[in-house]
Length: 165
Image 1 (cartoon, helix red, strand yellow):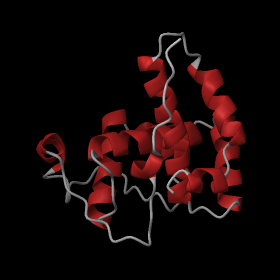
Image 2: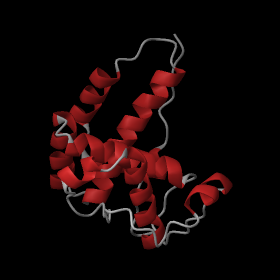
Image 3: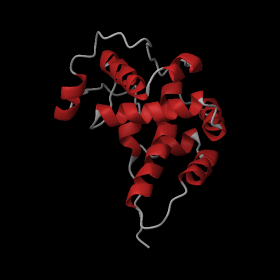
């Protein structure tokens, strides 16, 4: 069995103590260069609870664009790819707005552990993206729902913050 290395989660870490210097990759620039002033019908802000009904009424692409727009306007770091960052945020927000219990419980635990809502979104998104990566690159069948539930059940603020060290 091929061993899958755990990815460093620094790219999903929102570190307010560092001055962000976000730069669009060439492929992101093509997609997102002109979205700063577009009205997507939803002003996304990861620091606030989102209106589940309004969020779920948007199509997936619009959700992703709204997340990307927020990060561009706020000049918040997004790692190597704004597109991947926005997709990860969207996956976590979708889980929360659809009341996926493991994500809802993890959000509550992460927030009570001292993370901001935005950091907690990153923590949940990191686990989700790691499992997706494992499923694509593993030689074994990956039960993504079971894996995500197991990882989210034990996810703590302290453990997640330690991954950035």
